[in-house]
Image 1 (tube, rainbow, N blue to C red):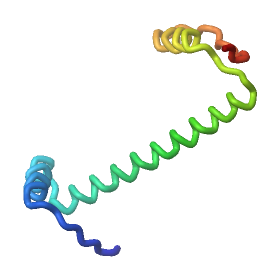
Image 2 (image 1 turned 45 degrees about the horizontal axis):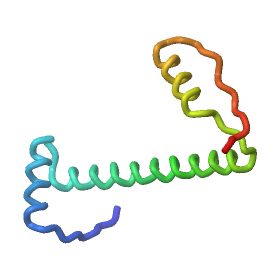
Image 3 (image 1 turned 60 degrees about the vertical axis):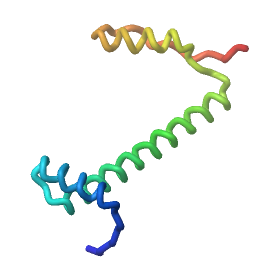
Length: 94
């Protein structure tokens, strides 16, 4: 394990200490957890962006998409436990 030094404003350092105490952690553990959560969120954001770009490329290549109102109705029906037919993609217009 390596060591990294960070400089913190006194106010932030005090807030970290208080938050860590509320959670029953040391300030060090609190900071490590915060960094790990931030890195994980960044990785999830990157993956989301990658998938979105991949799907957008597919839409651009095929010209096909599902209209928002149909997609929304499908998702809402699924959320209510129904088993609606999946909407089919078709060429974009406009």
